[in-house]
Image (cartoon, rainbow, N blue to C red):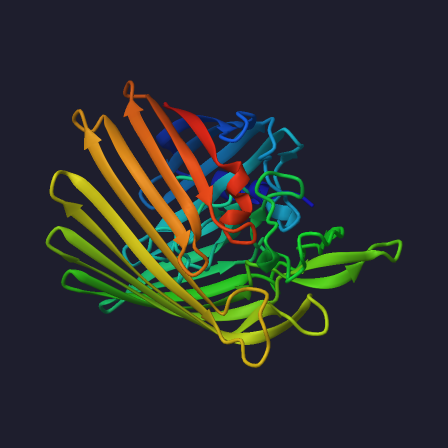
Length: 431
């Protein structure tokens, strides 16, 4: 089918005012990442990414934003699978080593009372840093597990968003007609999940082809939501509600064309009700999120490992940002994720407890920084430690070195990748 981007270009060329096009801003970001495993020194990451972005204006009220992502990789980390993308969202170029996709393509009208955005976009509604408690509207890129500086690494989708204000309440309505759900590592890539909790309870020794159904029901499998928020002095409170396909799949038994056993990834519909709050107190900022999914799809241990059911799920998290003495920035978070198991064992633990801690200190007039970060599943005793050193060499060039140190049991969320602990180098060029 024709790419929706051409529709957007047509809208831009026929903007209501037919005003003169003005280039508001343009930017080119180039990143290179290289890494080697600590166990044997083998190169396991080599990826270059270029992201050109441009913002155009049409008079006082209209603007257009376009950003594309060109990636080149030749390593076992890979560029990620695209089976859970809709056809409209799939990369324009997709091979094992080259990927070209649209990161953003939007047309925005900003009036006195409202802002309307049409096109390929993301909708960031959470207040915690990377812990997806209430922030579950967007699809995310998980091909590198959690080994990325930007969490969540959002996937933009085709849709519409309206932001307005009614009295003192900010109203944010969003619809992603695009049924894209997430991006995971492809089978055989470094971070393809092996833990049984991500395999519907199947043991690691069980192997079967993995099937994905076409993501072609654009309106029926879209995501629709609303966020209402209000400020109370230094505090901001928000309530959210949205429905759409689950972004973490459940697995069901399927069959290949030849009649052999296969595993099918399924993304059932679910509804989420959530609330967020953030407020400042001196040098400290507190953030809180809570979400309830009354009928969460989950794999259960029934007559076969791939049985599934729907169970109540409740998630809550709290985080704090603190400018501590000695110019040390502290970010700490904890989230509890509970699924009611009832009288059946789940493929995952009934309660997950995830904690994060980041300590960062800048030096040389903030040209450089030293950071150490911990992310871990406190209930399983596994996790990740990430020390890194960043330095801005010039106004346009920045270099970073660091390590991803994974630990824990082989069947844990983090421990499944413990053999992939690595050291890495990153170079960034901003023009």
